[in-house]
Length: 452
Image 1 (cartoon, one colour):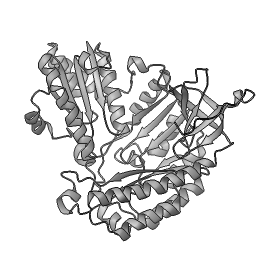
Image 2: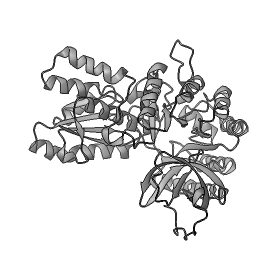
Image 3: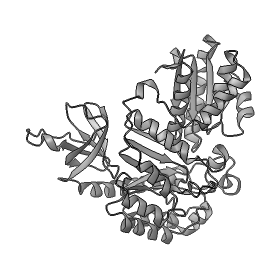
Image 4: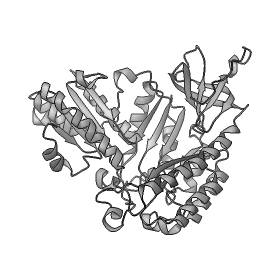
C-alpha cells in the first residue's frame, strides 16, 4: 500500500505533512512520488491567499478522473481550506473525497483507514490520539538520515485575529503544545540525523501563555538547546507585541540559537496598522528593530509586508516604503492584499485598491528590497562564514549561514549535515557563492554569471 502527499503553504503545513507521513508509515504504507501509483492521496491545503486556495481546488479536481478509474483510492483533503468547520460544505462540493481533515490533525484519515480495514472503533480512536499526542516522530523512510533541517510546531492556531487573516477561523484558537511532547519530538528528530530545528507558531512568542507550567518560548529554547545532536535552532514567526527582552537575551546567549529573527511589520502607516488590528505603531516597530540589533549583534531580521490593504492611500503606502528604506532589513516577504471570506476586513472593508496598483506597489518594494539585500550581502564578500549544508542542487551544495543566508559551494565531498567554514567569493541579493576553507589551496574557477 502506497501514499502520496501534496503540500502547499507555510512551514506549519510542511510539518503537518511530515506528521501524516510518519503516521501512515507506522500503518505499513510506503511513499510514492506519483499520485497515480498511490492508494492514499493527501492534499494538504492553504487558504491564506485566494491563489493558494485556487491551486488546491485545481489539484483536487485533477484527481477526480483517477478516483473514477480507481474506486478504492482514498482521497484526503486537509489543512486550512478545510478548516475546523468546512467539512459539510466541501463534502457537498467534492463528493469524491473520502476524508476531510482539519489542520494539524491526521486523526480523521487514520480513523477512516482503520475502520476500512475493519478495525474496532477503539483502535481507530487510539490511532487518532497517537497522531495528535505522541511526541516521537519517525520521519518518512526517504528522509531518515538525509533531512538536515526540520520544523517542530509549538503553538497551533491563533487568537490574535488581525482583520485580514483567516488563520484563527481555519486553524482555531491558540494552543501551546506541552513542552515534553516538543522535546520528545526534537530528540527523535536528532536521533534521525536532523541538525537544525525551527520552532513554529503563528505567534511563536506567545508560546506557553495558555499553559499552567510557567514555561515560555525563552525557557523552551533553553531546554531544546540541551538536546544532543541539535546544532542549530530557529523560531518563527514572531509578533512585535510579544517579543520580550528575555527572549532576545536568550537568543544572544545561547550558541545554538541562530541570530535570525522574523518579525512582520505588515505596514508602515499607523492608520493602516490600526485597521489591520496589529496593536502597535510604526514607531513601536522601529524601536523594536533597534532593540533587536542592540541585544543581538550581527542579527538578520526578516519581515512581512502587505500592500494594497483596503483604504491604503498612496501616502500611506509611501510611509511603508520609507520605513523599509530606513530600517534596511535583510528580507521582506511581500504580499498583495487578498480578501479572505469570514475575516473582519472582508466583512467590513472594501477591497478598493485596484489590482494593477497593488502590483505597482509590490514591484516598488521588491526593487527597493533587492537593492538593500544586495548591499547587505555584499558585506560577506571575502569573509569566512559557518555554513550548515542541507542538500546538493544542480551540482552545488546548498547550505545556510547562522543569519539564514543561502550559500552554494562546489565540492565532491558529501557535505550533507556538516557545518563547514566557507570563504564567500560572490554575493547577490538572494544567495552567496563560496569555497570550503580546506579547498583554498586549489585553483579557483570562475563563478557563475548569476546567483543560483
